Length: 164
Image 1 (cartoon, rainbow, N blue to C red):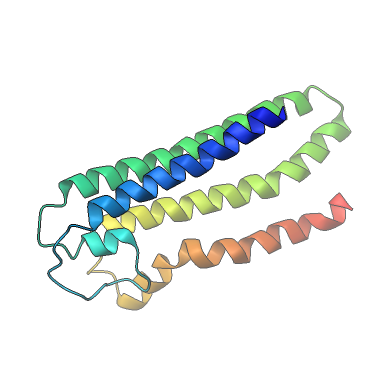
Image 2: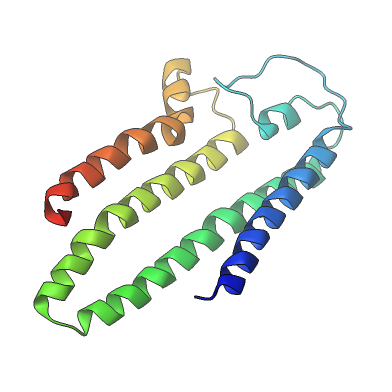
């Protein structure tokens, strides 16, 4: 990959993130809030939108569309990349296949775990969870923040002896 292509990809990553956050803040800032109690352990944009007295349809549509596009778009790109990598590796020797699988599996498992947690968080924030016990709701809301950092060292640590 050329330096120019890398620079363009980095610039696009920053630009798209900046635009996404800017639109989110510009949609949330003018909302009139009816309450001040957030029912999650941490504060995120949608928790604030849920406190609004005014119509939040635009916020909901944008938030769901942006999050879905980001999560599923990236997941599709990552899975496509891995399919291409594995296709090349599986055309080689048995040793090449084993090394490819032992190298790619931890990253792929970690990535799928992250996307599962993000998707779960998106669903949990959109639906009424009042029937779920508060303690379970708190634990589940922290899944993607806590399990990913705990899961990564375990996955990569198990593979370190093979990589060395």
